[in-house]
Length: 297
Image 1 (cartoon, rainbow, N blue to C red):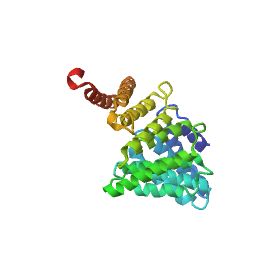
Image 2: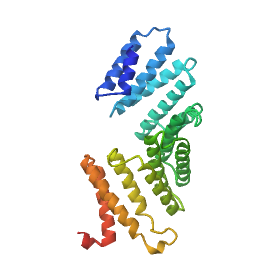
Image 3: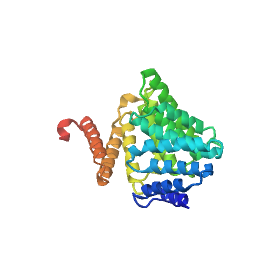
Image 4: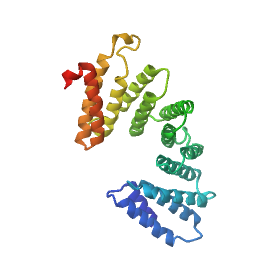
């Protein structure tokens, strides 16, 4: 009963303290769990790891979450379903990836965990989980620091991972995940080291426009603002006619200017001051380029 209450708090937290309360419930449940019920004990450990991982701004709790997941993995190895074990692999990978951002783990270890989970979470049987893992793999690849040649290979692998996810995830069935993947693929294409930047940016524009089928100013304003600012950046690096670049890019720059201005207004409205300032600086640069510094000022 304690575990069910904790799971309910995790799935639908109404207050910031709900996840912390769920963690307390798991602690209490672990204390009274019969020692011979290893399956229940392992599931409690896994649930507590998920609660600890989900607590906002709880980076100091991530190591505790990792320890719970690893203990659960040992306990459940011969008892749980393949899907439960794959979910543990996925969660361990996510914690390792988050810790790696802080320099407290290695991205490669997270990727290995993700690939292990993909043995169960296949595209055919578990498309949503497959897509989420591919997104995480791509993000991990793009976060790795390495030499130029290895970096290009990682960028290519990241693009492949995003594309693999989008092959199995349909807009109609999973709109939010679809939009996230399209936005992320656009970013990966736009910033990849490539000898074909125009082609990459053209594809990135298509990705952002797909994401905007879901991310609207009304329903998801901040996600919308992020995507239109990404789209503006891609447009600002494209000629109006890719086959005749000598004709310039006045139309694309004008559209980028409009999108940046809209994104800045949304960011300011929602208190995203740093993002608004960054977009405003880029917008100013475009205005100066188009109209000249004297006329802008």
